[in-house]
Length: 204
Image (cartoon, rainbow, N blue to C red; front, side):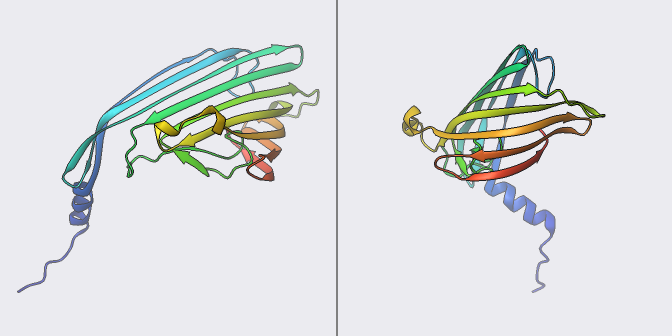
C-alpha cells in the first residue's frame, strides 16, 4: 500500500478536534482619568464577561470567565493617591485552553516573578502614592517618585478563596512619562517573595 503523507492541515484538524473553545465576549469600559499614565484625577472602571463552551475530545462543557477592575485617583498639592482593584473568576476546569489568571511582576504583586501566582480565581488590591518632581526633561511630561503597597492572590478552587491568604508586595520607584511610554526604575519586595531591582518600560 502507498503510505499516506501527513499534511499540516491534517495536524491542525486533529488538534482542533481534541481541544476547542467557542464563546461570546462582552466588555464595558468607563474612563474618566485625565492622563493614561500617572493620572492626577478621575476614575476608570472596566468589566468583561466571556461565556461559551469548551470541547475536549468528545466531551463538551460550559465555560466562563468574568473580570472587573477599577481605578480611583485624587491629587492634593503635589501628592497623588491612586487606588486600584481587580478581581476575576472562571470555571474550574483542570485543563483550560485560555490561560489561568496570573499575578506577579512590577506593580502586579511586586516581589514575585511574572505569572508566578496563578489560578482560576484572582484578587489584586494596590495603593500607589506618587509626587511629581520639579525636574523636567525634554520629551517627557515629568518625573515622578512614588511607592506602592499591593495585596493579592490566586486560587484554583472557589472554596479556597480567603482574604487571610492574601500575599503582600511593595515597590519604591522613580518613573517618567515619556514620548516612548512610561519608564520605571524601582526596588521591589515581598515578604513571601523576593527583593529586586527593576527597570520597566511600559504600563505595569
